[in-house]
Length: 146
Image (cartoon, rainbow, N blue to C red; front, side, top):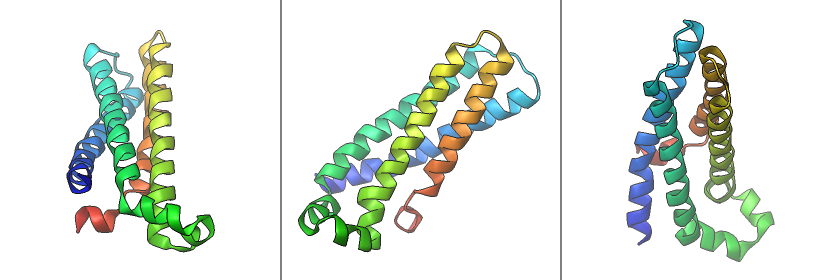
């Protein structure tokens, strides 16, 4: 079960990164070029929101069935924080991804409340960019690409 969920989480992450990059650059480009907000832009932002939330759910399942989590519950917080690998998989990666997803969600919610195009793209650009940077900062690249 663990291997299947890990596989799903790892490969879904490629889609998440791709879609969030597309949504972020779409918002940035259209903000700076003063383009009109279209239904296509709404769908791109929404799809980024959906794939990140699905990844979060998969990641949450993975966290609780992970041998890293089992090990972390046995050794206690002091030893966990001294162990680089356990700290990454049990503390740093999940908490940073949660913050990233929260920012993307806030950006999506705030952009819907705006009436004109420029403020819509501004909200998306700010929150999706910060969310993307956080997301990229805590991907376990050595596992992901190796």
